[in-house]
Image (cartoon, rainbow, N blue to C red; front, side, top):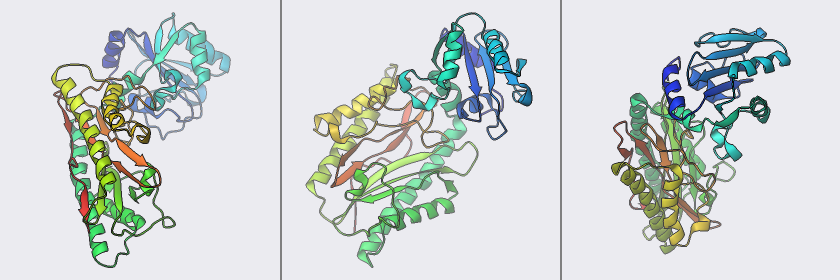
Length: 396
């Protein structure tokens, strides 16, 4: 992202959405979205509240405390300084002006928790001045979550490395069961992390490596205490995510499944077929919508995917949304592929990067998840950015 926000572009978007303005604010570095949109350094001291208002027309306005009155000096606009809470209230009322519709980092009913950063008290204060507060979710997506060409390139480069490491991980399972049979889930997780480091990749959390019933917990965490060795007859799930160790790098996040041995259990093969068909239905829905010039919303893609799983009789075993936004964090701040945990009504647009990852989780038995990443290129063409698993990996 650039060091300064493109105020004119934001204002044009506000007018197109018939909004009076966008109020960004923070206290104690809580709202990382405001810092990113405005190009501010979130690591600097922020012991007092600050407000930055971008009107649909006219000059932006700043409201800062006298103790930290230089906090927003890098940004364009006029500045007011407050000292007491009374002067904060009067200054904010003056800043916002006549009644209007104002976007804030708020989500009705917390439907999009990624943007729910403003506390209820500030919302009450702004509403008390007569304004209507609406969600800034679409603005956040456009001005913080969309990925540029460099980010797209770094995402793809990370994908090449991670797909290679994933192949190496399954190969390591095969080598172990053909030899000593001592390799554990936790040791394979650590092998993946070591390979990430060797290839210049970083990640916020370790990968998920699980056999049999372990990945029936979608966020199973391998540890030395719960680790067990890979043996013949095991079903295997590996979910790994990382990004290049560079500023502005974008995560790549995929899940593959396999079986240790020559004969795959019929139930495992069945749910693998359902999951991959659901994944492909979601991919097809996105690509078809864009090819026809139709709007495509996160909730719609989730519905297209979930319908396949439901038809097969596994609706109650599909425990999460179909996918999530991907950015500089593995879970980004753009549109999610979701009509289960929330109803994400944001539109997929060029620059969006997201996962498609349906799963079926049979508690106490086994699990399959198949995850790919998609990117809506800047020419408006959605693509899967890495390899797609078509068949179960068989090792040993």
